[in-house]
Length: 244
Length: 244
Image 1 (tube, each protein chain N blue to C red):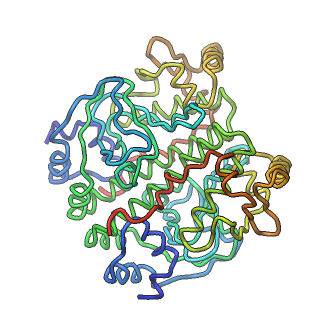
Image 2 (cartoon, rainbow over the protein chains, first blue to last red):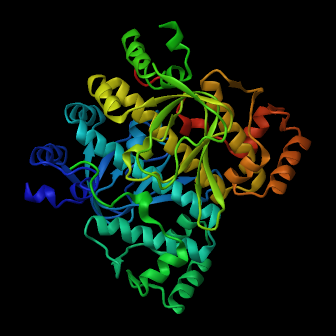
Image 3 (cartoon, rainbow over the protein chains, first blue to last red):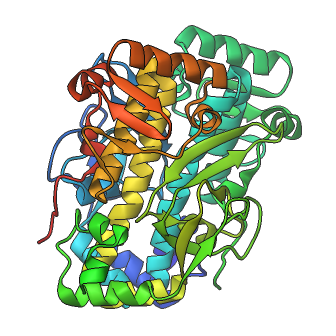
């Protein structure tokens, strides 16, 4: 059980339910067959049918939509423990793309199998619903971010959200985290130009709040950054399990 | 069965699965106790615990988030057949508010009861997952709307989305729909000022594409409006049931 207990998906779902040994075993059965995907191979393609859903075991991906004029809006980045493409398999055609940012390891999940598992294990079903609800809560917060916050607050909020999400799977803390995102990726996610991203990051660094350099985000003054971005992490709902 | 078959929730879920008589009966049992809520009584409150989830039977509500400075971002409007507040009951505290725009009729749903129902009826479980996925797909599209479209395209896209959603429950068509939304509500949803909303609506009217007046949205030229907004309804996934 030990190996499953330490997977990002188990660490994450533990924020919703205290997983029993039996539930960990069931979860482990869903994670049996994993494969690696390299950068450049899409996981899910907008407009295509018969797409698959996955649990991300390691690495980072981004989900995005392309508009007719070729511009893209990154909706979210997914980190280990996240579900990928559940919407794609329930819809006639996928409404978004998912592509790896780093080399990733994924476990494919078949919806009939998933529904069957959850029919027999309602607590796990609740944990899945919770995880999907949390994904939606993040998209909602990104909408508020782009709709209501200025560029510097937007960036600060984004970095704090990533830090909080990563801390849940043991990959981040109040001091910072390792981050493979490039400035063009940040620009596409935050609705800014790459030049603007550069300026905003310099601004956060110069006032001593956060530094993003060489693949490392460092929270130079976590509390000031939280106050500046008006960051309230309750929408991530990771205070601890509702059901023990 | 006839009465349940014609409820908005049954009409909507029929876009995912062809509901059998037995499934309609099960759905009907979830809808037994309804109550009316007046404008001014919140359904779900941000930051509060022990919130309830509902199926909206009639009327319109909006879900929104308030920021520390008092500004609000409307995330979506919900119409009959929509689930309300599922996220609120799965989270420690609700991350959003839901308030009625018109007088509404709702059926409260208890999550243990819902999970129990869906454990026994996996096709209904799939339809629920589909509905929640569709809600998320709409929030994603609103993110693209605010992040990547100019105010006139944004408004056009928004009106077309509402029309398509309403057509699924028999309350809208390519000619238009009845709409209780005020200009301040549109402004809070689209990230525009009320003055800007007024100007954009005039613009769409003057070019002969759409008119919103006296609680009626009229699509004066549906096809041109679709082309103008680059509206592709596939993210609403309402082409017909995947499972018959």
